[in-house]
Image (cartoon, rainbow, N blue to C red; front, top):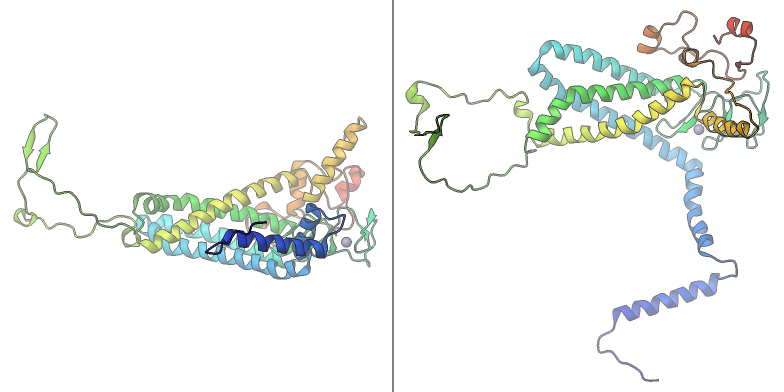
Length: 380
Ligand SMILES: [Zn+2]
Ligand SMILES: [Zn+2]
């Protein structure tokens, strides 16, 4: 066999040799008859799944999301004050006071509902309570009341479990469901408020201005005499006129609404707010609509999946499935918002309220319960 000698080492050949040597080593060490690509992929991905499922993920990434939400909200509010306030102050003082009241009412509701949703315990199964269990949790080994589900991230059973929210680092359940929903509603309203009253600034700064990146370019020198063109089609030569000769003092500053704020920093701040509000309105807006539909139907996120499969199961038997907790849209909302015992929409929804939901989360009345009982009880 002839040997080929290279004057300079062929890097590609060397790499190929090394790679085949490495692959042979790995195969000789790990190969077995059951080895396949999917098996290798499973093994390699296992640490990722373990991390996502582990308490490390909840403990470290949860707080990271909470800090991100607080940081983004604070930054957007700061920019609204720094850029929006002087802009509106220049335009109209009365409108500015009106916007300050509306904006701060929205902000207060956002902060209140976020804080309450993140700090209120969603409600856990307490064995000292007397309740009718519908099943047993395979992980906690406790009897589960109706509507209770196990949160795999927190590893506990939550009353009226909706979902685990990474942005709140908390489960959404019986005691904080209202706070969670109203947080989303007020955040979406806040973003709509910023878009409505900030779109003018965005248009002027992002669209009309050069973003502070304007550079003076040498222009071609114009030749000929300066002329004026009028409707008769005549070109009238223009002679140079000095303002001073005519006794006019030219204005040194133009009274543009954004004035001196139109610089690179403001351009960047407004771009940042624009990206945040667009992302929030799409993501949180769709989530709010989804939860609005769920609550209108008297379902939690988990129940919507269960009810869908139940509907199919019932349909296969020629029957119709009915959600036992659906008391009709109006009553579902009254129940969800806790508008009972003389509570009003204005005082307890429009303004922050820390009232608890009706009932204990362990016992649930259904549409099949006696009408009189439901009227006398807390539900309707
Ligand atoms: Zn459990
Ligand atoms: Zn959880």
